[in-house]
Image 1 (cartoon, rainbow, N blue to C red):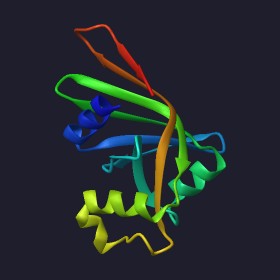
Image 2: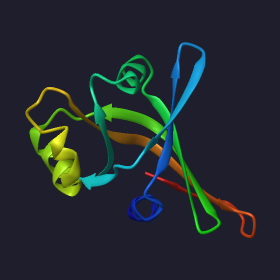
Image 3: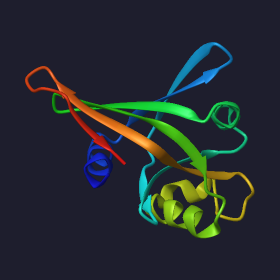
Length: 130
């Protein structure tokens, strides 16, 4: 899991895919955190992505850096604990202008049954599950 986290931090931007009915939806994200032994992302409860994940919590993200790409799939599970939200926001202080752990809008989710596949054009794919 730490290797996945490190890759996403270095890539800075990843693209999260969800579904809305039968339509895939993809958008850029940048938050990633490890808290309580789990890999987390963050968004706002008022956003369409939050509504899509509530309807279908399965998601996949993709990031690319230095000729290697990562595809991470799994089920995103909401963690409503104040500590989880604070940890994420403390890791991204620039988000505090839009979110805080007590605003009723901050949503942190962790990957459950995660499957990460690292790929490149020069090496065989490598899989990590957590």
